[in-house]
Image (cartoon, rainbow, N blue to C red; front, side, top):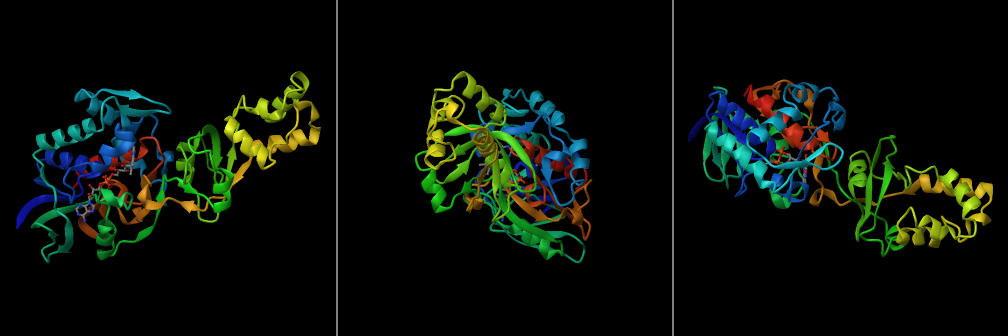
Length: 395
Ligand code: FDA
């Protein structure tokens, strides 16, 4: 049996950050992971360049049944602290858009920084160790049985992630451990995920795969995101859709403002006056992708007329249709392609300062396994750094 002060299940973003911090406090730390590499999700994130934080991260960028839960860790270890860490390691990175920071070279640079920190802090890494079983001894220590060995520890940190991307080693072990110790786990759902479409919509948009347009996507609860929408072979994707998927529920619709920066009623009046003998198809194709305009014409959302043939009421109707384009997804692509898992270990069960379970002293839950989900844009990694750091001060 291997004895450590702290065992961390999961060599992902949250687990590695926590491990280094606990190690720097003088704790003996083991990180166990079933993968053959550490930080596998980091490596594929951000298209291989890892959107490692967001300069504007605030608690408002997170979904959680208790919206106050993330305030403590996000304020104790901020995006600026993480930026300072990567600066110290000489990381080359750039600002992309909307406060998102990406590596210039490769996401491997972020994994290397975390592994270097772990090495400096004396952390031991046990890869290819699948956790099979967790028990608590009468003396209050935790025993972790993996496919390879048994670990004994005073503090057990569960940083085993959510259910997204099973091919990268996602397992429900974190939720199972929570339930084993009597903690409530809120229902989980794939989030930051593309929508699939009903067959009739697939037929409508046939040929649009690859077409992208800036828009505002709005869910039925009124949440809106102004980013790009992308038609794919399977349905709808792009940042606007991924963002709104976290707020969408089965059976609901999504309203898309196709021209969020244009007052279409005024624009149509102008066209009628100044370019009246041009077709709406040609005029709209100057501000929307041409292939998409053809679809709008085919399904008669846009009349096949010249601008000067539009009546006042037709202008009103068309402007409304373009600002409130309604789409009813069939579902999502699910955990296979989702970036994150909504729901998870109920944060009411945890200390927001230390992430220790109130019902099980010495047992901690951090990262995606908890019921905290960030928006798209580096917010999920920032939560992993912040909660990993906070837990690492205490476990
Ligand atoms: P994470 O899932 O990273 O780690 C959990 C670890 O536990 C895994 O290594 C797994 O192998 C291990 N494990 C699970 N079960 C086990 C068991 N039974 N035994 C042993 N080990 C076990 N976020 C962001 O902010 N910016 C971005 O650019 C992206 N991009 C992105 C792209 C894609 C394709 C995905 C899928 C996700 C993103 N994300 C993202 C989200 C981000 O990757 C996610 O929020 C964090 O990786 C969560 O970190 P955790 O440490 O909580 O879990």
